[in-house]
Structures are given as C-alpha cells and as structure tokens.
Amino acid sequence: MTEKYWEVPHNQLALQIEKLSKIYNNKVKNIALDDISLNIPVGSIFGLLGPNGAGKSTLINIISGAVIKTSGKVCIWGLDIDKYRKQSKLAVGVVPQELNIDAFFTPKETLNLHSGMFNVPKNKWRTNELLELMNLTHEAETYSRNLSGGMRRRLLVAKAMVHSPPIVILDEPTAGVDVELRQKLWSYFKKLNKLGVTIILTTHYLEEAEFLCDHIAIINKGKIIANETKKSLLSQSNQKVIIITLTNNKITEKDKSYINNIGNVKIHKNKLKIYLDPKYTSMNKIIETLYKTDLKILDLSTKSVRLEEVFVNLIKDNLIK
Ligand SMILES: Nc1ncnc2c1ncn2[C@@H]1O[C@H](COP(=O)(O)OP(=O)(O)OP(=O)(O)O)[C@@H](O)[C@H]1O
Ligand SMILES: [Mg+2]
Image 1: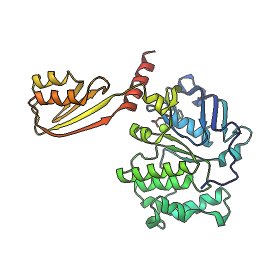
Image 2: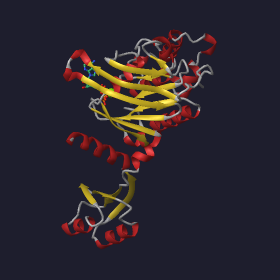
Image 3: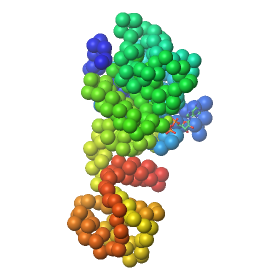
Image 4: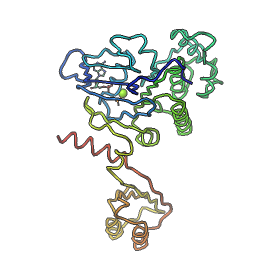
C-alpha cells in the first residue's frame, strides 16, 4: 500500500523527537510541550494518551506542519522538518481532531483534489479504492456538508491516505463514530499496519489503545510521563472488574460486607462493579461469596481495566509530585 520509494530510515525510526517544546504566544503559562523526547519505531502502532489539554494535538500539529515548534528537533521518516519541510510532510498523513471538511465538495472531489495537491500522478489516484475502504462509495457524490459526523471522520481518514504515506497519524479517529464502524476502522488500521504503515494514534478510549497499540506513551501537562511497550505498561496492573446486574435494586449491608471481602465494590442502581486482582482472588472464591449473599443475579460479566487503572494511577502520581 505504501510506495516502494519510502526506504526505511537507517535508524529504524519513523519519528524522532528531541527536546521538543511549544509555547503558544510566547507566554510561560502557555507551555503546551515541555522539552519532550520520543522515538517511534518503524512499523509500530503507537498510542499517545493523555488527559484533555496534555499537548497531544500540539505534538501532532507540529508534525503535520500546522503548528510551528518553539524549539527542539523533529525528524519524520529520517527527514529533519527544518531542513526537509516539503519532503518530510509527504511522509505523513494526518487525520486531524477537528472535522475540517470542505463542505461544498463531495468526498470524491475532496480526495481527487487532495491527490492533486500532493502531486500524486493521476494514474495513481486511489480515490475509488479509499472510498470503498472507508465505506463511502454510496456517498461519493454527496456534498460533504450533508455527511454525518462518522462519515466525515471516515472521509478524513481516506484524505490522509491519498499519497500513500508510510506514517499515518490519527488524532482521535473514532470520536463520535458508532460501535460497528469503530470496529471496522480498528481492523482497517490493523490491516494498514500489517502492510507496513506506522500508525500513531491518540485516543481517549483506553480499550481502543489497549486493543490496537503495541507501544504507548502517556503525556501529561506537556511532559512524557510513561513510554513503554503495551505489555510492560500493562504488567503494572492485573485488575479486573466483575459486573453484576441484579434483578432488583436490593443490596443489603450484609451483602456489601460479603462482597467487600473479594474486592472493592461500586454500586449503581441494580449494577455492582467489583474491582479485584485475580492474582489474589480466585473465581471459586468469587462464586462462593456471591452464593452467600441474597443477591438475585440477572447477569454477570468480567472486563479487564488494566490500561485504565495504569493510566489513572500515573496521572494521579504525576499530580501529587
Ligand atoms: N492555538 C493555541 N493557542 C494557545 N494555546 C493553545 C492553542 N492550542 C492549544 N493550546 C493549549 O495548549 C495546551 C495543549 O493543548 P492540546 O490541544 O495539544 O491538548 P490535547 O492533549 O490534544 O487535548 P485534548 O485531549 O483535549 O484534545 C492546552 O493548554 C491548550 O489550551
Ligand atoms: Mg487534542
């Protein structure tokens, strides 16, 4: 899917960021990125996580050229953006956070126009292929202003791909996208990655990062506070949550005291969420304990909340320091 002429950089880094800072309007209170360094290996699906205002979009916008850095060095696919502005820009396709779509163009026109802007030879235009990939063939001739939010987001993903860049950066690509399509996008991103495209992704959906990414960096108040493989980040926690739906809202103090023996419980209407570490609490113990209570159980499911827990703890620690 990527053009052959994108030879892999000798240091195997898709993105190399050294001591990067961004201060908006030269005001100290506007430090959006504070001396960050980050290496993103070729071929990874790299998650960039962080709370609102952490600096994720600022970083992405510096890479795409939409924001000018204050200081530091950025190399995209081995090309220093200060020396090779134009070439480095070609190595990356960005799906921005804002749905900035040309309202009076159709998706087909948008993709054709964009291919032209990137100087893609006409015989290599991928408009139809990308429309199909993003499930937009039916809307190909519809004015973009008439597309739904999710369709616009898909069009933005297609737009980022017109010049077949070796790096695709997705700034919250599934925000506002329905569940079915989110899963389709996930499998498309995985497919793209298998074809050799390096993917950098920001998201507030931690399950999305947990499912897709092999490497995760967490950014908070303009600083990188974690940068590890997903495996090593997740090994910091083993927490699971058991979700129990009851047939009624009746939960007595006695029931609660039993449940507290297996984990930390949160109650909302007829739902109980029990947070526990499976290393210390066996399934047998959970079932035995539930059996002792008078709870009338309608449904029971389990979920891993590992990334969520690690994320919240890291941000919390960072606030205390
Ligand atoms: N154009 C701008 N002018 C001044 N300050 C800005 C500008 N853009 C962003 N900021 C500030 O920089 C900081 C980082 O913002 P940024 O948009 O990079 O965060 P983010 O991590 O992408 O957040 P979110 O998760 O909400 O998208 C914030 O304090 C924000 O107010
Ligand atoms: Mg953002």
